[in-house]
Length: 380
Image (cartoon, rainbow, N blue to C red; front, side, top):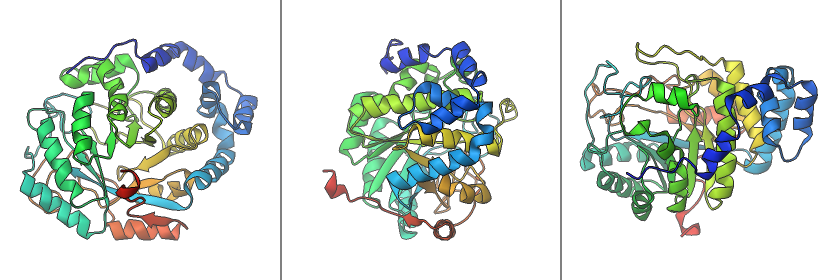
């Protein structure tokens, strides 16, 4: 593994927005700053800070209307559907907030799917209509080396039009190998952009390298990955701070990886091991404000919403910027074909509806559920 330079372009952008400057921008913003932000066609970082500020709370309805209009303008009335497949729950890192962590104390079997078992999972999900899949592992390169990931991507491409991975950060040549097997997307959460918090919640393991992980998505883009997805694990730090930096990161990637489509996810930390109390819980209203602010700041960026959120909230968020939703998810290896119902799961899902039920809810909201939104022939 090659460690990225701390002087990377985006690291310099983060350095230009230290905590003191960001906090001042958030808490000194007034109603006039929010109104100016809502009136701009191209927002500046200071405008994003205003939309994330307490002063923006009375403007949520105005922000919702703007977010709805921008989403319709850039994405129409479609919501893409995808599903995660957990290839392995073995992990050698020790992220304090994660059920897969080596010292999490979580109960359940640890396992890595065999190629035949990967096929079984793919066959079940393809039979449900899915054409977009996300392959996940823990932070364990020995249990799921790059050669194993390449084989898994190749198998999944036999069943699905779009295959993405959410795995440990890789070198550019490793991403390029996966692209050669049919990889189309990479999801890589920074978890938190606050360096002190990042070091505290990642006490050991390869994930502890903040600089290397920060540049991971850029390496994927340079390797030819078509879709790049970012996210912060909301609840690890102040939501407005991580949300602001997430917005800056996405805008930087729009310029740095201009040939790739950028999307954001909004995972909210709800269930964590006992050793990790959630110190920065995020209320529904704050989640809504964050999504609205980022949609106005980044009108061309996709928004992914997972089954971490309840069915009621997910349905209400559909008109406010969402472009992709997971459905019928399992967070344990073998969870779809019931290969091992005793396998350790990463977290409890909140929306347990079937894919058909989620698709029906999308239609009731006046949108079209899309199982496949492109043909690979158009991009090859």
